[in-house]
Length: 179
Image (cartoon, rainbow, N blue to C red; front, side, top):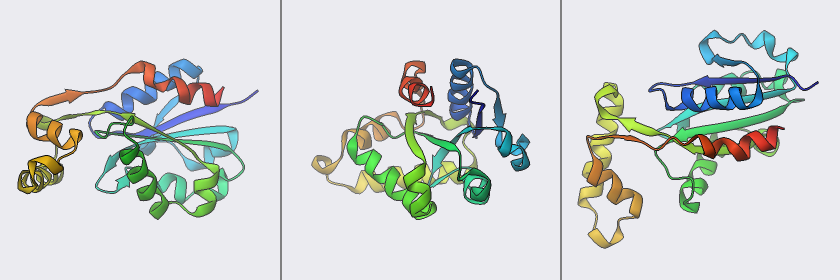
């Protein structure tokens, strides 16, 4: 029997929501990264890790990279969660390029990647993330209007608002892959 675990790190709750939906769909446990002990990896055949995208990295991804020796013979799924629209090939290309700087070639070949769109709650952002969004906004405001992508316009139009793009249906490809 395939034993599966979902492990996640979530700063603002969007990744956690997806992790819980995935665990429910697969009838398996979900663990917060800081509460999961890597010595427990051997008891699972499939490990699903979810982390938010922040400034070119996936939160908590070191759990995978630092414990690859324990994971290399398993089915590994990585889902990222961020504002980027996963329907846009440009976004997916950027996410994969970012991950290729974090993960080795062997890891990239073995890990099945999924991106799920999360959201943003400006009232809950920590100082670093508020600053990053402010800098991004200022950079976008300096761009020529015609060079702005749809996503850039959305960031400018909704700056300071709370957005939630989570969608339970979007986990279906990941769940089907694991099954």
